[in-house]
Image (tube, rainbow, N blue to C red; front, side):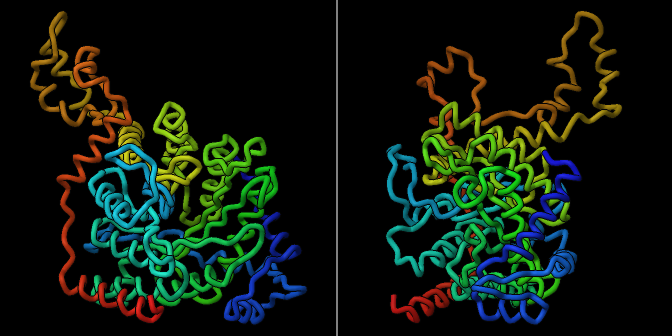
Length: 469
């Protein structure tokens, strides 16, 4: 998408923005760090010298290891390693049983985590739903507990500020057996972002700094809306997004050089004919692929988007959009790709869609694995045995390779016309719904030790009591 020269131009434009345009940041500790290292202030804006950006850029790790709940290595973020996960905090959910759109609740987080735990090509978990029935101040922690209890996979979590991140860290320490153990084998990543254009809220900076202090990997991913909160031209939106990331990066790396940080830009597009923020505009696909290339150029792990659609149902449009962006992610080596299950401009959750994304990723992981060529797979002995006019169905070579040589779908249909009609002419959405319900009915997640569960409950209760919730 971008040449080496183009990547350099966007980088230099971002340096010009942080040095000459400046950004709004009011966090006391961040301002102290920036002043100490030669940054200047004027009329509420902070200006960062380009050489400070370059210096701190060198300390960002190029690889981040993430582990599952049991402490097993689950993801190596960086390079061309591609992982996929669900999205977070959707206000509405398509009900699996009724098919109706309704407000999300905490039980939707539970079901989303358990379903993702059962799907082999979903690598990490986000909440998938916002618990509308809860006080917003405690909702992040209740979602965290629901996820910890219902998946063994690593998680990307959202939080309000330092205070609930601290509770999550304490729970992680109880799970791992201590702070050093959790830092050595991180189990979750904390999400953070600036407010485009060119503003950094105290809560976001506070999370960056706290994660740096205790060794939690975090991501800082501006979401400049092209035509709305960023220039309508994608080059300009990318330059602004990179500049906003650089501001957060500088603060975090000054606080603790080498702290684990994940780069990302969500270059969404404001469709000026509908005033909708599109996840599936072709310009988004272009900008999104370009920001993955920027991550390669910077040699840092990246955050990305995949498995989502602007469509309001799991229809042909959804299939086209999901396939387009998700395959681009896999081909470009996007590291940490979220939003499987996002429908309707990222406003509604669909568990059926997560099932379809899992199948699509599985199919393309098989495709991108390529063709193995060796003495056995060339099958010269089998060809000689069968000879002209024979058949391979009954041959030992077919029995030997019948499982590994062919990828088989679970919700994409290969049924005959007669069998499809006998099955009630079920479409993809219905087959995915049936699979989701079946997995939720039978999938068991390894239980947490009682001591960890008790510690988690006590920490969350104490947090609620401090807030008088």
